[in-house]
Image 1 (cartoon, one colour):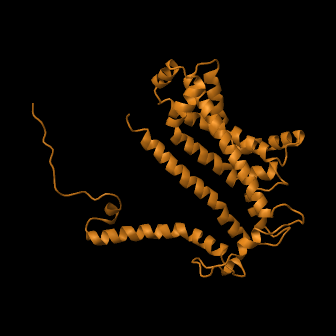
Image 2 (tube, rainbow, N blue to C red; image 1 turned 180 degrees about the vertical axis):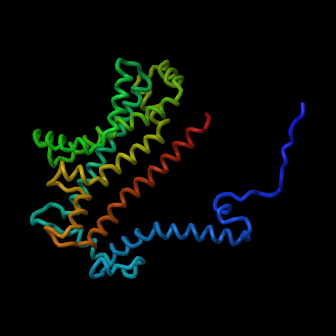
Image 3 (cartoon, helix red, strand yellow; image 1 turned 30 degrees about the vertical axis):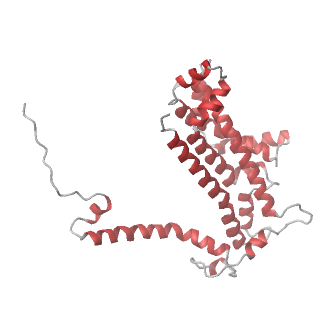
Length: 305
């Protein structure tokens, strides 16, 4: 039987950006072009952020006078937003009160979403019960409809039951909207965990709750970290739902919108930039912390005992 010999050549094929720029240019020129192209797009991506930082710490008389690269530094904008009260007798300044309200809603939402997603995902993965498949199909079908469709109904329900301007009930809406999607994510992850671990723990006398908390959830730490990040960012950056269900109890997004319109208070774009930059700090902290946790979960799960 004759085997066809594969011909090997020492010439390496150009790939990626080098192929795009051709193979006739010197290697140094190719690398210069590639890195210049990358730096161009990095500059385009960082220009709005640099302008926002410059405006947040600027003492310019107007937003049109703010340069892209910061040339001055002042904390007057932050001193103003952290001390301004629209009404006398308020316990906290407007921005501080809206920040604490948003933090409360995001924290409650994150805790409940992580706990309930783990419970529902463990139940649909490890147990058999009636109407299991129709329930999963129903949750999948609900994801086809945008959340905006139910806002009028939610407003009527909240008004009838007296739940308007209550951060806790707003958190429940975010939780209810996140459970169906997160259930499928957790279900897909937990299905890869061998059931032999459950059986071994059950032989040692562990209950189903102990199996979930001490065995399944630690192995599913990466996906739990992802769910926690997405659950926190949802209410933290949302404007539409809080503006409908909490019209008299502002979140940070509502405060930023109020600072960006000329009425009923003066137009303050510098306050808007300072508040928006400060709003990004908790998101950065959550992202950095959870990224380390997710990386640890991925690497620890690959070790053999």
